[in-house]
Image (cartoon, rainbow, N blue to C red; front, side, top):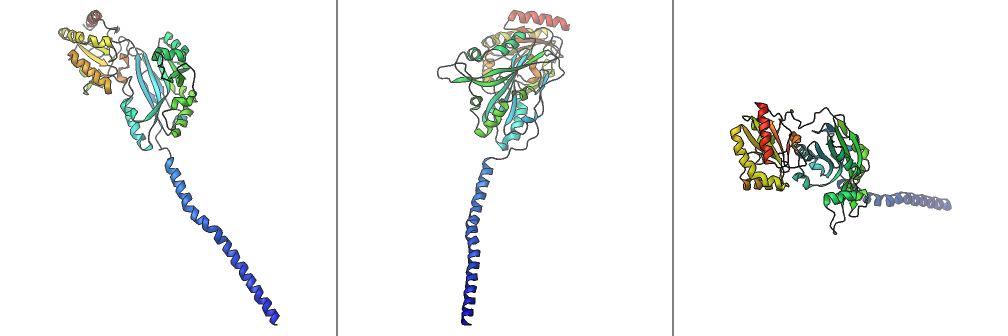
Length: 395
């Protein structure tokens, strides 16, 4: 009997030990896991904070250009981390340049950035807007709009990178590693007479050798660089944005112009206000980078006084003085020359004024009709002669 009781007690102890061991083992395994959960959560939170999701922005609206075509945005251009910015640069009479930039804009500033873009896109200037210099940015593609200029089209289609560097940079200094150069992609003819030459920006060494596409994007941080690189690697998407729109060539004799802009002093004016009360208005287009234009300013002021007795006035439009240093320089030149007639900032209402030969001078009637072919270059005799022809047309 005693033996039976001892065996029973031993069996109970053995079962108890097994039960304790079974419950202790999981407790030992789960304790470290419970301690690791907060660390994993913290790491996940830090990772989410380091790479925020792109802000949900409304789709880009098509950019209506003044050249007779629309720059739309394909689906692949929507919902990017960075911002896409069109910039219009005047280059010549019936010739202009547009560039598509990719800007590295903080997520919480994207909405404000688009508002600034909407304002700056109304201007035509060879200078990058001041607000854009607040961000890292790069040029993705360039687009030349050309009308009735087959030789210019051929030039952009055939120019080599080394020729471009020598022509536009005058060669590079020994210290320079190279330059970003537009490389021809495609020419798109439009029914309205324009041809659109599209180019991709590519970095080339000072010897004219092509560098990897990534080298074009050296300004950008890594998280934005890959997105911009994807756009550069798919130029067909860019070409697809060009859509033709109904349009007439600006700047033709007999066409009418109308605009709203600012004087160089910042006052808002309209063409109707400026032209009212004058049978003929001579509109002189100039730039701060044009020495003959600046040298001519005192003579134009004298001419304006002479024209006043002949129902004619002079107005100036400075194509590069929308802001910054060029604006300050333009005001200084006008002050030094004693100019009293109005001088205006150029914008997209005035695409008819741009010309790659400065100065260029148009003669308008009181209702804004272009009365004569423009006078190209500085020519005081031609100003007087053409004013007489324009005055005879309006009676």
